[in-house]
Image (cartoon, rainbow, N blue to C red; front, top):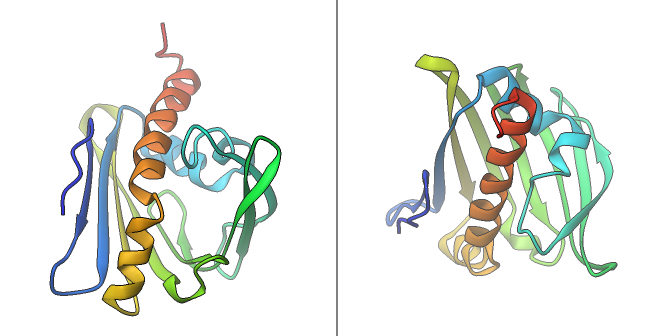
Amino acid sequence: MTTPSPGTTIEADPDVPTVRIVREFDAPRELVYRAHVEPELVKQWLGPHSIGMDIDVWDIRTGGEYRYTATRDGEEIAHFYGSVHRVNPNEKIVQTFGFEEMPDAVSLDTLVFHELPGGRTRLEALSVVYDFESRAGMLASGMEVGVNEGYDALDALLARLTGAEQ
């Protein structure tokens, strides 16, 4: 499965219960990485436009953890959490991703930040889940909307941070 969106590819492997997401950004790798690890930046882009985020814990370092609540119109609608297994600053984050409302769909996620010519970055994310049923639940939960809208918001945030926004 490939989801068309400006610059975002989402692929579900037919043979292995994985989801691969690729997106390029017009910003340096260090800045794209910062937008993933600094909670005040993460809150500005992660997830669909219609959902807010209350961060309880955001400790993105080897051995760290995170927990946040998605909100809509002031109401809690979902709870996310994970353990951070490995961080190579500006290069890679390996973490688990859990969704309390779908406890069997925990994934192991690897995010790799590739430096491209011209101060650009390609982010590749690979999520591995236990079985195809868990992956189907992940995909059915609105993940595609959250990824696409979130990355659009990240584009805008990066443009503001680099001064490229007109």
